[in-house]
Length: 111
Image (cartoon, rainbow, N blue to C red; front, side, top):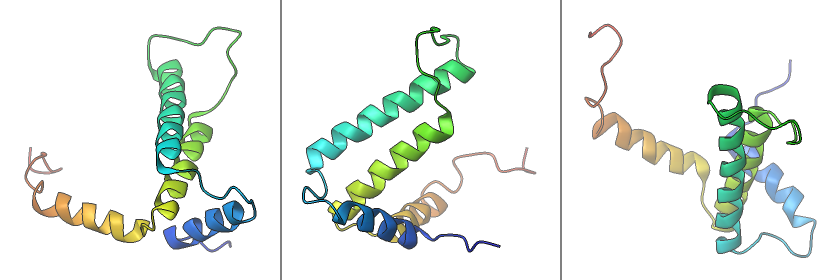
């Protein structure tokens, strides 16, 4: 059985990949533009699968999984280029949600 990769593993894998190229990571504004582009492509796939606007026969078939993977890759690039530890970033957000937003939503069994 294959060992599950941690977020740190994923950040290191992306860094090893990017580090083999002279260009390295794109500048922050370019990465932000790439994130926006990938989010738009994911939105198009979600719209095709779950929305009313289906793809034209001339549009390429892609999966939500593929588009989410593209978005995740660019997000990791952004984090790496900015020196952000995604484990710590997520822990900070989860702490915020579990304190500030703990009573915002109806919990299962409390209906």
